[in-house]
Structures are given as structure tokens and as C-alpha cells.
Length: 315
Image (cartoon, rainbow, N blue to C red; front, side, top):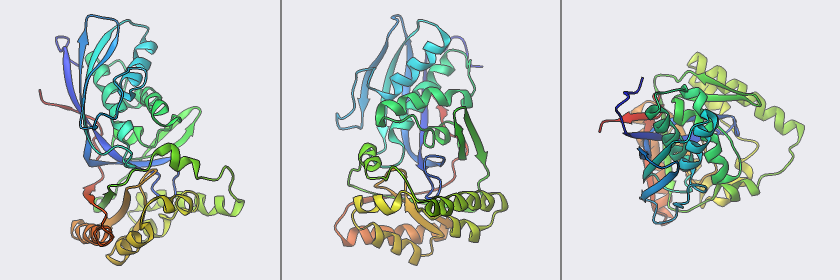
């Protein structure tokens, strides 16, 4: 239980890779970095106030009705039927519009911190719906494939949204994730707009088969099966054109030894699966060099699956 005399708390919520190619809107995983740091304090008002945001270049709103962290906290206190005010300080340590769950990280950090200060009335899993409300403000859809892994850690599968049913999947010990973020912005709303409203039955069958096979591969530590399964028939064919030189970077990743490669969330970040740290470094280098060849600045992140999720930081 959180100590009763705590009036403030600092937390870190990690970035996430959503969709995992074949699991559109239903699969995601957490990585070690980047992420967001958020401090939440009690105040004597009945209001949630965004006191300061740094690292966003002035792009994020201080309006609590438009800020993901504040909206998620409001959903929490509404459910508790209490009038408690909070002051929120946000340090954005990840790029906006990156496809790494930037809005989800702030939402998760905010509601997790408030829950801790209130004595932890909800479990992490129970906090996910509140964090989803923050996502709704950010991109118009209350999806959980970013907020669930950021909150709970690990790899998650959203079996159902109504009712919400989140399944934690095992992460093979030697599975590494490479993420390369090119310095171009792709908004989630724009990336969703290019997707078809309907798909052919054959496309759906191929996608469902891959989602099931990826799940089986994770449980059986079968890297060959994982590699064969991480194929996107639904979103990547339409979103790839929004990311400059995507096909070249994907080819570079596979040539460098990646098990698989696809778009992270809505992009423009691109992720690859690797077996082991050495392979991950070689893959990251190959992907970065392809972007550099085309004069696009980029940042690479290498991580195992983050199994902790959002954490409390030392004061």
C-alpha cells in the first residue's frame, strides 16, 4: 500500500510497440526506453491542474480536458466518486507522433501515480480503462494496445474490448526489440484515415492465422515461427507510404538478420525482432544507415521486453 503521508510521487511509464504487425489494435509490448516521467501531487482544490510540461516543444495542451494524463486521472476519481485535486508535472522523454505510444505513456503515468497516492484502490489491470480514456482524447479511439503494456509490462493481447479482456503473453528470454524512429511525424489520426473500412475475407484469414501463430511462437519460444508470423496484411500495405523509405529500411533490417520487421503502432517508427543483443545491434545499424543514406535523421532504441511496465521512481 502507498504510505498515507505521501503527498507526491514520481513515476516512469515506458514506450510501447503496438500491433506487432499481425495484431492490429489487439497486441503490444513494452520496451525499456524511451518513456515519460510524471510527477503528481495532491492539491487543496478539487481540480486537476497541469502545472508544467517539458520536452514537448510547446505542442501539448495544459488544458486538463485535452491532456491525456489529466483525462485519465479524472476518469479514476469519477469512478471513485471523490473530489480530490491533483497537480501534474510531465517530462516528455519520447518523441510525439512517433508510433511509440507517447500519449499512452503520459496517460498511464498520470493515472498510476494518482492511484498510488490514493492508497492503490485499483490494480494495474483495473487502471487500464481509465488510461484508455486518455488515449481517446489523443487519437479519437480508446484502444488498449499501447496503454496495457505500458501499464502492466510485457507482451499483451486484447482478446475483447467489450468487456475488456487483457491477456499477458510470455516473452522469450532472448527476444530483442529494435526500434528506429525517423525524425518525421505521422499523426495517429492520419495513419488511421488511410486504412480501409473493410477487408477481404482472405486478408482477414491470413491476419488471424498470423496472430494465432505469433501467440503460439511466444509460448513455445519458437523464433522461426515468430519470424514467419510477424506479417501485416491489414495496416502496413496502406501505411508504408506515409513513412519515407520504409521498404528500403525494412529490407535493410531483414538483410541484417532481423526475424521480422514492420511499423510500430501508427508509425513512423519501425520495429524489428532480433534473437540476441549482438544481432539487435547489427540490425539497428543497418536500419539507421538506410535512413542516413537518404538524409533522414533518426534514433535507435534496443531493448528486451520490459516486463515491469510503469514504475515508481525514487524521490
